[in-house]
Length: 280
Image 1 (cartoon, rainbow, N blue to C red):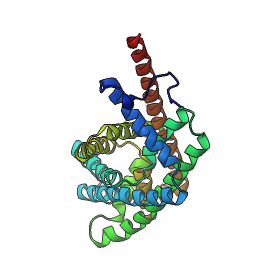
Image 2: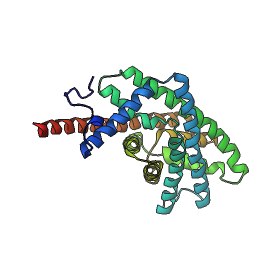
Image 3: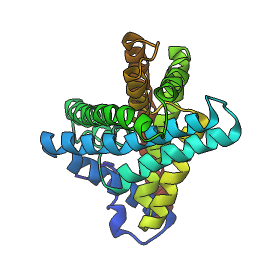
Image 4: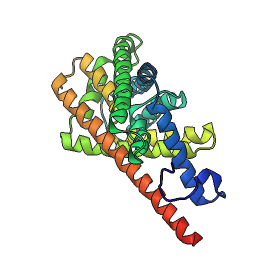
C-alpha cells in the first residue's frame, strides 16, 4: 500500500531530483522505523543500555570542564566546551549504532502518522529504549562519581554544580528547552538519513551535539545522567525535584520530535501534490 495514498509510485523508482531525494530520505527513515518497532524487547533494551553508557562519557567530560574552571562560569568558551562534551557522547552512541531515546521521538513516529503502526507499538519502543538509556546511564554515573575524584578528573562538587545548573530553571522553561532539543535531535536523524558517508554523519552529529550542549538545552539522556551524578554526589536538589525535571525533559523531547516528524510528513505530502500538478 502506498503510504501517501495518492497513486504516486515510490520516490525510489522515479528519476533523481530534489523531490525524490526528499522522499527517499523519508522512505529510509520510515523503513528504519518499521524495522525498529518490530525488534525484540531484549534487543531494544540492551542497545539502550549501551547508548546510555556511551552518553555518560559526556557527563565525565562535563565534570572535568566544570572543575577546570572552578565552577559554572557560563562564559562563551566554557559553553562551547560543554557543547563539545555533549557531542562526544552523541558521536559514540549514534556512530556505534546504539539506540538513544531522542532519535526515536522522531523516526518511530512516521509509521504511526501513516497509520501503519499503532501508538501502543510506539510507546513500547520508547519505553524500552528510554529505560535502557537510564539504566546504562545510572550505572555509568555510579562509576564516574567513584572514579573521577580518584583520578583527579573532577571532584564530586563539580557534578553537583552541573546538576544544579540543569535543574535550577522553572519546569516550564526546562520543558521548552527540551522541546527545542527534541526538535534538533529529530533534525539530526533526518540529516543522518541523507548523509552519504560516515564523515558527513560525524559532522552532522558534532554540529547538533555542540549546539545542544553550548546552549544548555535539556536532553533526556545526557541531562538525566548528569542529574544522577549530581544526586549520587549529594546534590541539595532532592530526588523529587530531579524526577520532576526528568519528566519535563522527556515530555518536551517527545513534543519536539513529534513537531519535526509532522512537519516532515506534511512537507512530503505537499511535494507529492506538487509533483502531481506538474505531471498534469
